[in-house]
Structures are given as structure tokens and as C-alpha cells.
Length: 290
Image (cartoon, rainbow, N blue to C red):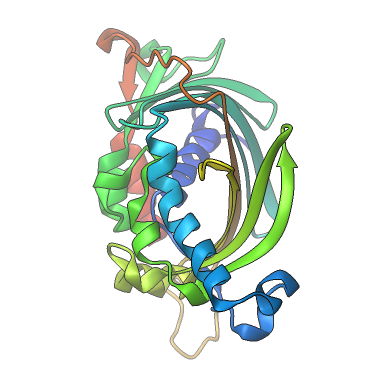
């Protein structure tokens, strides 16, 4: 992929999109019926499935109770035959949503912080507009443009809206697995997007359901979460109604893993004189694509 403007541009958009995905966007999968249930779920008693639903719904609160964790994030985005893969690792404040991470994407390594719902990034050896080493993006403003509830930004483990949108028919127990040596139970979940904040608007662009998988440890905390989704962009305004032009689509897979619960998180914003604000540029880009 060609790089234009600041070399961190593509990765910046990826990070912002990743944040939005983890705070309430949806996918285009169909709701899972009884025919899609795993053998474990189809042969178990109804109370067993209810217990699985209860565990999944409680997982976000139980994870947040740990206050902090070490996490890794792997994200792949693909559109129009091109793909971008990014991998990050760092620490996350589960109570407030602040984080400190390093991200690798397209051969570049970035330092990233989220402080008070503001995303900061720095690419070694590169300068943002004005010669500043850091760029920043106000995630609240980006979320408002995307129709996402801004109270759920920046804290993927505190998305209580997920729990409210999950019913017994949405949860299938897959089985047990070990993650980093920890025993976990793996669930497949289909979240009704309409039950999320701003869901009616999101359904038009993101489809009816959010396909998600979660792996919970013996204390009911998230150890891994995977979200697969398709973001449907509207057809070009210049296209004729009868042209049959298909909407562009962005395929996204995001996998997060949590470990070392209770680890220290020291997230501080860079000094103001070191930061170039790129929020308006991102918002303009979003308006052009809508």
C-alpha cells in the first residue's frame, strides 16, 4: 500500500477503527439458530446454556474488577484487495480505559497512549505537522461521527452494553482451552446490534449482529476476545441508483488477550508542545467516506 502524508497515517486510522470496534460496533453475521449450536450446547440442559449466558454477561464486570491488565491486540483489516495487519502489546487501566502500548504495522513501530479518551501516537524518526513528534486524535469526536456511545470509548473490558444485548439464544459453549497455560471456557456469541447504544443507525452500516468469541478463565474474567465484522460503506453519492454499484466493505478481525491482572499502568499525555492535533483531519476523512 502506498503511503501519503505522515507515515503514521494508515496506522493511526487502524488504531482508531480498532478502538471503535471494541466499543460497540457490529458485524454482518446472521443470528445463530439452534442448528448452529455446538455439540456441547445442543446436548446440554437448558440450565447449562443459561449458565453460559450468565458467565458471558458477567465477564466484562468481572474483568473490570481486576482494575488493570497486560494485553495484546492483533487486528487485520482488508478492503478492495488490500490488507493491513497490526499487532500491539501493553497495559490497560480497566477502570478508566487509559493504556500504554507499542504497535507494529506495515513495518512501522509506534508508541501509543490513550489518556482521558484521547489517542496519542509517535513513530520513531518521523515528524507530524509542525515538526511535532506526537499526533493526537480525540476518540470522543470520532465516536460521535460514527454514532458510537462516547461513554464506552477506550475501555474494551468495560463494554457493559454487550452484556445487555446478549440473550440465551446468543451464546454457544464451544469447549475448554488453555491460553498461556490458563484454563478457559470458550464461548461463541452473537450480539444483537439493535440492542446496543445507537444500534438502529449501526445496523444500516454494520448489519444485524456482532459475531464475537470470548474465552473466560475460572474466575470469569476475559482472557481472550475475538470480534469478526464487516463494515459496509455507502455507495458513492455520484453512482446512479440503477447502476448496481455495490457498497464498499471493510473486513475486520480483532483479537485481544489479557494477562497479569493488577499490573501497574502509568499512562501520561505527552507535553502539549510536542503534540499535533489530527482530529479534524480524521473527521474530514470520515465525512468524505460517508
